[in-house]
Length: 342
Image (cartoon, rainbow, N blue to C red; front, side, top):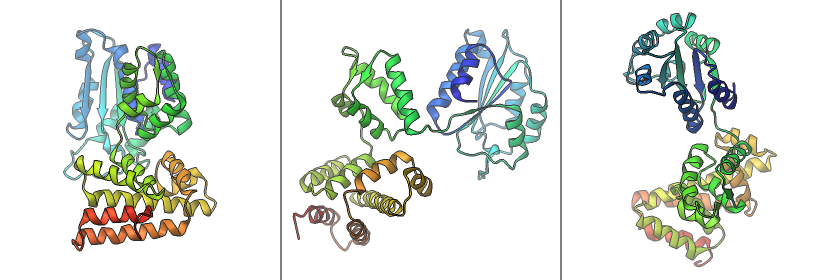
């Protein structure tokens, strides 16, 4: 069942005895949890019917005891089971010994007065396990895996419109770029933007630039573009700013190296005929990162990217062995690529 249908069912008081929320998009997972709680936990007495257990800290048996308990002055008991790693192939060092046989028994006849919710914030479950098969057979499964670019755009646009705001196209693109198309991050930043634009109801490019912070990776992405585009002075200034923020030159060189590696991989795979989705799947990264990389690498020849990559590898060695001053080496690298030194 998709999330929207599940939310509709909950609002209509049509509850399942067991839910399995599976996926890594935290915002969507929290959205369903919040809706369940708003429908079931409405009074102080209802608080006695709500429990949440982290399987990394609490044995499964305790959660099941709670699930089998009759609700206190209410129709339902709501029990969340977080981090059910016993459904995955993950092996926990010194992890708790969970009694999954008791869970199998519970799933044969779930309590009619309990809503048991498993929250598995992982990409995959271990389908070979008996307990996983049993839950998937009994539970209402809600998919909360990350959306694609089109779905995120639609969802965010609808949210902005429903709040009575509009956003400029260039501001929208930058917002998605700075949040890596991560819905949880986007929705978090939107709250600040709504407050900032409360008078005009228009979210502008300047507002996004002012309020949405750049991550280190995004700053290095800009640094990469400045370096490759020959903007030496701008690149040096950004480098100096990052140093003032406490970043280390070796770390910046390593991230820049990874960025050029991504450009190289993307360029090579694109030349072999791979499409954006195929490249993302091959490199195991988000398609939006591939989209941005493809936009950049069209401007550069493969041999130039290879030469830059080789120099960054050499610089990494020189920095780590102390054979040359790190800051001087990095600045010379920037100036050389921007054509300001031979």
